[in-house]
Length: 372
Image (tube, rainbow, N blue to C red):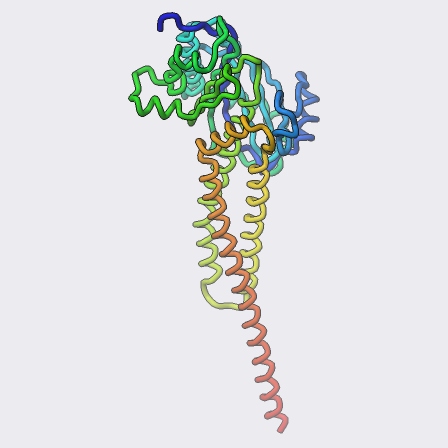
């Protein structure tokens, strides 16, 4: 487009999120990482927002990894890598590539090229190697490690400065954000374009945040904002809710089989089988409930209205609340089954005691007849 602005300062951040364990001892992980050659670890806090306005429930641990290089076209671009460890068992990896001194079209092409490079099947090894580098050092801090196949990805294009100051309205009128947000090269329909641009937010007249399902664009001329951190937490919450949703999906059929097995046949050990299965279900409910509550409280919002709007929109867009509701419905099913098994176990014990009492009475009657 004629007269398109140039990106003076910007970068691209690609996220990959993993669930690696039931929980992570962050203090132990920090100690383990400190013994590493790099030794760079810090507890994350929001850079701009005051703690009383928005804060992490339990601040994650940020680790600096060795830089890597990405092949973008014919260029080999250096990239910085960081990892964040969350106490409820999630690890996020972030690969950050510089995208400064580019025309807008070149900036968009670089965003899409980075996305394609890291999403390519051959380059899944990049994420595997990075996660392995983290696990090699801090795996000792994982509580009940259980790597999951559930992962999430997110890509963010960030601009801090154009060649001339620009308002959000001017930016939207002078550049086309759709190719960056969609990754598509072909023209999209008006409906698709409007849907991509629907979730946009500004606090000042010269900043802009646009959210989509798997990408975001951030224009923040005052330097790093906390929007990227908020989007990461929303993605982490989605990851964990999806993990527990799939876990319970697998557990419900298994639970039904165990219940039918426990109910099959009549013998004196029925009450013990019921009680053992009930304890197993209660433990599962307690563990999942505890972890989902910690996930729900990963970020606490009080006073920052702008970040609260962005965070709420991200949770809604990522359907975190819908997946969370599905998890809680399945937990309710397991709770109901637990209560039913507990009642059956109590009933079975009562029946056993009644049978024992009747047997004793019968024995007494027999002995009395024999004595006479």
